[in-house]
Image 1 (cartoon, rainbow, N blue to C red):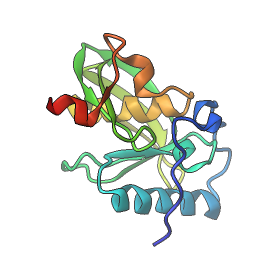
Image 2: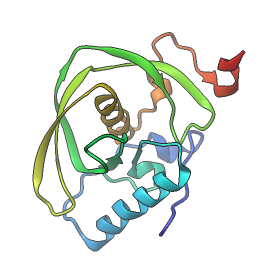
Image 3: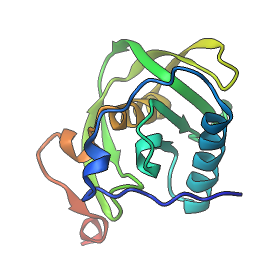
Image 4: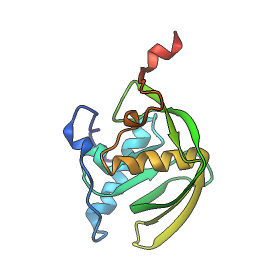
Length: 160
């Protein structure tokens, strides 16, 4: 198991645009494995993107605890969006904060898997939300930038 340090919201690196992956090398495969180890170790995330561990590449993973299990996305592109869902989000790179974010209810995304094979996935509800959240990281966008009412809450504030 190899854990990587999380890049937090105050680090300018988290706001940078990521470069596409030109070739799936052993380094990219190690990145995917390390990201999964880091996400599961944190035990509070359902997705993580490469810039959150300091790597400016278009790579993210998600595991929302459904039948899909862990899904790895290399050079993802959201090709279709439908509907709207507003819900609370948090982020490993923005610890202790949450806000309401409007995301598509249903999406279609295409990407490469770890073997370089292109795949397409239709997702809705939580999986769609998670994919959109992680995809935003690849463009330097944090969920707090998308707050529907401009308010960001400390998690302990919500219990009051």
